[in-house]
Image 1 (cartoon, each protein chain N blue to C red):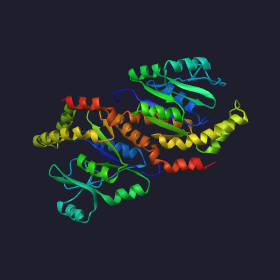
Image 2: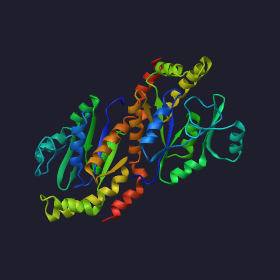
Image 3: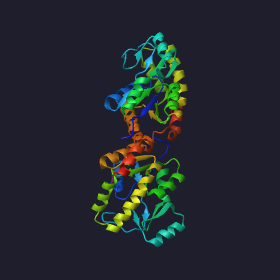
Image 4: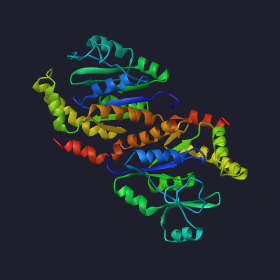
Length: 203
Length: 203
């Protein structure tokens, strides 16, 4: 019921289960869309081009950079990731809620660009659970796993910069909590100035 | 899952249906308690002493005032209303969420005493709906209704001082929104410092 759509920034370490949570949030809520980022990293098994990411060549990404087509971009684990500006602005203008799944550096930039955005950090129940989830993912080699764990620990320390934390010890619970946060934030007084005026003027 | 119980301040004009909403919120959620205030006003039909309010004599109320037994108190429509301190502190210490149903002056005081409280204002769908609800309440005479409407309009203007607004156009929806706000607020990062430490230390 808020005056316009919300921009939600969602982060969490690799292996925490962000994608699964977001897939549920998006498919179960018509008014919530997940922005699809561009990346130069290789597609993993189970990922879909245009759904998980737009998987592009480095040259294409850099050309888009030159055109100022990104809200934010970052290099991460040797790969480029970027949030395209145009589709996000279009969805917000339409009144839809938009979730950006980005890492901590990108989140920091978005918070500055959109001070009224809502930021959520997904935490694992513990670092050991995160490690076993990463090891269970057959696509990664030992070096990749160790690098991801190191990055994960640094990222988790920055969760205090976010408005909310959701612990993903159960996917259903985590999905309900993310949706609950979006629904509650839409009721914030400062997002409903227009609605309040209507109540007061409607004698 | 937050580190401790939340203090929720809930206000709304007379006739908006706060009591009905709160009765549902309390009975459907074991971890949410509504603080019972003391008042010197007369009991209305359907109200229960010790549930709706503790209905007391003015002399008793003033004695308690002398003992500094209230978190806040206010005179309103010629009657005294006060929130007793001891039971609220006991419930918060136990980790329960406590809802204080108070008018705008009291809410202002509580916000200063408990800066991390959550404040919710219940709005009617329109002022005309509020007026017909007040007129439908057989217990009030015309003078009382007009006074309540005048006060209601002034109160509604102050809803912008609250964190959230909930429009009571449907009791079920309003109940779900109040509960949703409490659940989401419990996920705020600044209420979960302890939890975050545990995740980081639990290798």
